[in-house]
Image 1 (tube, rainbow, N blue to C red):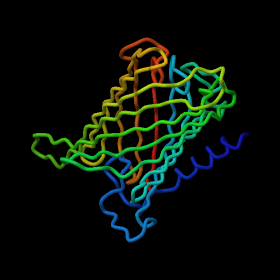
Image 2: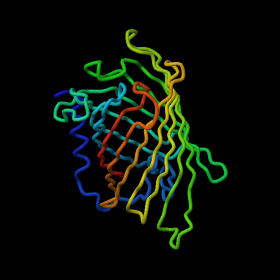
Image 3: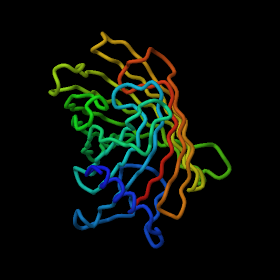
Length: 272
């Protein structure tokens, strides 16, 4: 068993203890809740562990059938997010996959920055680095990648009898991704991807996400493609959330980075 597989099961065990007595959050957000008023950075820290299973058909490199472990550390301060993504793509990469034969994928880490605020909107930003750690190399991109992105979070209000029952927002994200080194025999990476998301929490329990994810591949002279996703989930046992997501290619040909033909995702996360 590889070191990454051991880390996977060790972190999954963190998800098993009861969350009784922990703080409750009602939004799946990268920003610390306002209830924290720390005098030092550590007092404002909280974390999130996420485990999800993705079955993907006809995906691009890095978008195959896999199990994903995500670990977030969230702080108050100019730098407010440190994220690690540990993908474990199946050795068999088609839609059905082989969940009991995972392999290490390309490690990804993100550093997020405190949002700028203007006109009731928030603008968090981030930088990411991806490392070609996949084994075998065919399960990854073969390239070191650097990227930067910015998000806009816009709260939404509904003209309903009980507006406090709804917590909704519109999100827009733009991210540029470039390869900077790696295997010279693998394809260079240079694309821009966008995410437009409607996200709602109803009565602090049920969640809905509608997402459109276009991408422009500059290596292929500006060819475009996009996927659409719909997700339903719920918060349970206070700090836990589970969800089911269905995704499908909406426009463009296969081979556009970050796109796929079909995906089913099942996930669970815990905040602490």
